Length: 153
Image (cartoon, rainbow, N blue to C red; front, side, top):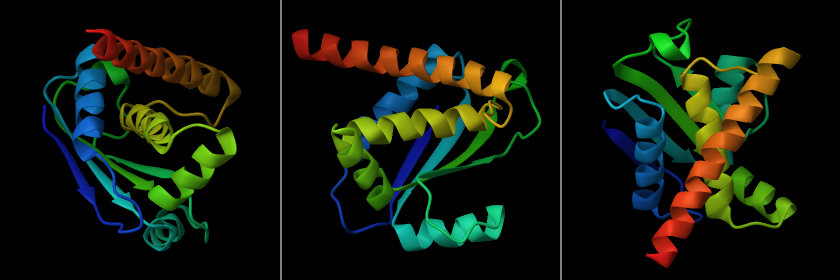
């Protein structure tokens, strides 16, 4: 299950190997071991251009997802290129500061959110949002437990 991460921004040093491992573990947990995911770590200017181009919103955002298997349900996605996730590191940093937690935690939250969008989850309607939020909590809990196990072991 190839996971590619490219760090296009220069403001913050990011441990991309840890993020790759988190994504691989999440994909394995979700039973999506034969998919490919690409992640781009960007600055606000870059993600703002993408947000304007694809969502007609002229402002930076924290995360954008570009699914390659759009319209499929999570269970129907079996392999191939899942899609691309773009994360703004400066926006993630501001959100981490506001929440009082480390940048890595915020990046994991955003990667989980982006990954779920690639898998067909959405949060436009209330009932969809509730399902997606529950899945986000489940996956973040999995990452947190794995991190604790790594520290103890």
